[in-house]
Amino acid sequence: MNTSLNKSNEKIFITGGTQLKGNVRISGAKNAALPLMALSLIINKGFTLSNMPDLADTRLMSNLLGDLGINVSWSFGKVIFNGSPKTNEASYDLVRQMRASILVLGPLLASKGSARVPLPGGCAIGTRPIDLHVLVMEALGANVYYDSGFIIASTGPEGLKGGLINFPKVSVGATESAIMTSVLAKGKTTIQNAAQEPEIVDLAKCLISAGANISGVGTSTIVINGVEKLYSVVREIVPDRIEAGSFAIASSMTKGNIEITHIRPEDLECFLKVLKFTGSEIKIDKNSIKVISFKRSEPYDIVTEAHPGFPTDLQAQYMALMSISDGNSSIKENIFENRFMHVPELLRMGANITINNQIASIIGVKELKGSKVMASDLRASMSLILGALAASGSSEIDGIYHLDRGYEKIEDKLSNLGAIIRRSK
Ligand code: UD1
Image (spheres, rainbow, N blue to C red):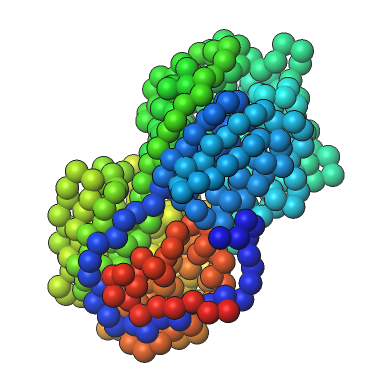
């Protein structure tokens, strides 16, 4: 695995039309791992995370923390962090490669009393501002300004102070910033309109076991009473619900029979209900699900929403499924303004989709046809893989480095299920 985003011209080749069958073990969640890793800036000795997915994004976060002075050691899915940050300035070259790098801002500020973090910039799925992260720092008493492409934040001599953080918009990352930055602030912090994603609950649970005082997590109001110190903990990263959902769709699209193991089905409740409405048979067990499909999917309209609604991170994959459903459907993207980059590529495969503002209208076609396509972002690349798996003929998918940001050993996992897939330079 490369330690930074390798924008090489690797491609994935898939010969479609194979029914996928068997078991697949889901990895730890990238979106849970990244904020947990940032905690190493405020939990200083022997902090350990297991079930760590080996991905371009987690390796990049590891490098960023290493560059800040944390000693990070990886061994078979276990990562141990030691030491405290030695500098308050995050590397531009690393931060610019991953938007989630903004998650180091709050912990760095809490640890050093000041932080200089480059603006992470936009990305293909939208402008993705960071104003809500800045709102967090200011609500906790920091002075924040921008200079030469950096966000510069500093506290007074008294350090961070608890305060009221009332988000005008629900944000996963900003809620995580608010939790991580306020756990060591003096006094009480109230976070209103907080996001409720399972990864946020997991972050708070990790902090609670490290000694933090947090209540209300998993609801829209979180209350934190600052503590003096956090203690080292060992924590297992929760399973990746988005990876699990992607494999569930792979089963539906290939009339397959896939058992998806090492997951928490409760994190996928809304998604699994939708998949059931489309006609797939779903057997839910404690830590696994089985998705069986015998016929072409039925159309079903969705709207993406913050948790517990339908996740935006499964929208592109669900669109691939709807593109071969037996009828018309619509998908409204509510979270990001430009998250339909996969549409032109699905059209190349023969899908019939039109976009009007934030709504995609899909007329299901009988089958997709293998094509040369280009991935534009992480989840878009998975939707093209899914399209190619179900299509007749062969596909060539370019821009695969996006996929490596969030799907661990994807070719191995798919070929174990019977897919004809290979990667080449
Ligand atoms: C996280 C996930 C990403 C997922 C997204 C929504 C990680 C590492 N990434 O991203 O996979 O798609 O949640 O579930 O966990 N916004 C602002 N100002 C801000 C921050 C966000 O306006 O300061 C807006 C965004 O542009 C977007 C909306 O808020 O329209 C939600 O974004 P947010 O929940 O913050 O997404 P991320 O945390 O970046």
